[in-house]
Length: 219
Image (cartoon, rainbow, N blue to C red; front, side, top):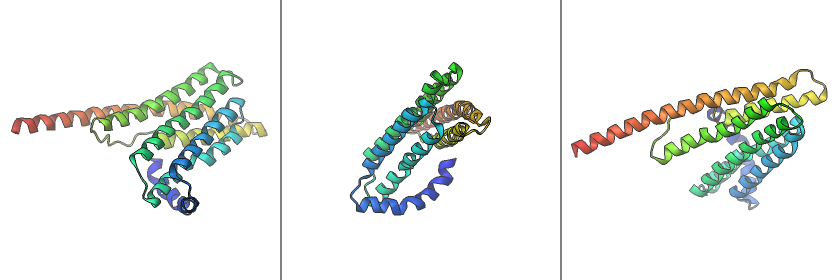
């Protein structure tokens, strides 16, 4: 849902920067790699130590590379299957680092086995949600569904609440509760989204099989 409304806005915002980077000879793939590296470094260095505010600020700077590289590819006319593959693959790496960093915090100084498990579940469910769409498309189905909590929602909700939870270090009381709330919300929302995609793939597969049988019968 966020993709639908936010992408057009950020495309306009990043178009001048994308044009500048292209003039400087920077490739979209380089931006993808640097962006992913920044997210992974921020998540695995800051979050396990409980530095949620500064970690989120650091990560957010690099998260926007996901929109910048696509903008650069379109402007340069260099959109390709390889670029789409690389971008999608590294998105999974970045997401895993964010939830992995939070899991490490709760496994250590955060001292919560339950929230460590929820963080790991968010990591795994996000991968499965993405896989269901990719697998459905690989067998020729459109997987035409807008899930309740897709990648944009997972990332925005987690980063915003993690960053706000970091204000506990500045003396803001009770605000740290936002992080567990975000993790539980992402976990439950991912379950709903997975169900939506599985149901959609089942319906589309049945329709495609029925159309194929009908075409065979009339041939």
